[in-house]
Structure formats: C-alpha cells, structure tokens
Amino acid sequence: MHNLNAFTPQEGAITFSADPALHGIGAGVWQDRTLIWGGYIPRPKSAPRRGPEAWRRIALAVAGEFRGLRPHYVVVEQMQVYKDADTDPADLLELAGVGGALAALATVQAFGYLPRTWKGQVPPEVLSARLQGHLAKKDWSRRVQFTGTQRDQDILHGIGVGWFHFGL
Image: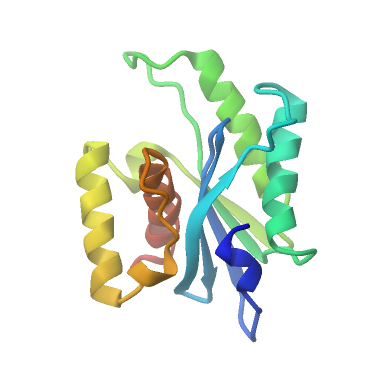
C-alpha cells in the first residue's frame, strides 16, 4: 500500500511528523534525525469527513501503517486561528482534532508547532521548493513517495515540520 510497510525499525527513536488534514496526512517518518520515509496516508474511504470519528479513523490509518508499532515522538503542525485570515475557524478546529488524535500515537512525547513558527510567512510553493532542495542535498528524495498530485505539497509540509523540529 505505502512504502512505509517495508520499513523495519532498527535501534533509535522513531518520530512521525505530520501536516494534519481531513483528507489524509502528509507525513515523514524519522529514525533519530534521519528521514526514512515520506508520503501520503489517505483518510479511509469509509470514514466520515468531519468530527471525532473522522479524526480517530485517520489516526488509526496512520497507526496501521506502523504495523502495530507506535512512534516514540509525534510532531504536528498545530492549528491557530489568526484574526485576519480567510480560513474558517471551524475547519481549523477539525484539523486540531486530527492533530490531537495523531499526537496520541506517541509513546514518549508529542510536539506541535504553529505555522508561523515553523514556516513563517513563506508562500507554500516556495516552501515546497526549498524542502525539495533540502531533500536533494541530503540525498533523501528517493525516500519520499510522491503522488504527482497536489498532495505532494502536504507530504513536503509533513516532512517540513519534522525538519524544523530537528533543526535541520
């Protein structure tokens, strides 16, 4: 299904980093400070689109990718309502629910970073290009399972919040 199923943990802490969304999760899996997988984990088709059950089912889909293992750490983009933003606050509350459900997968600790903290005011397409450059410099691009769709930006942002967490 996803190349994460081929992942076999070795020694070292496993961190899952994510860009929470209701359609699915752009994600990175890290061993210590090394990216070992990046990709997109979709919301199960049978799951509702919103609400606590949707959040739970998305987190269970992520947990299923780990084949019963749980990450030591979870890093998510934390939602915040900004006064002058065009985003519907109700949508942000939904995303916060997804982020909370993902955080519950951590066996040691969960971390959240506000968008303005980890990506600043950088436009999404510029941030994605920068992250692709960083992946290429580290020779990690082949570890990312891109979809060739708009979800690639979600994948890069899921990796990006982890990149920020590790100070890479």
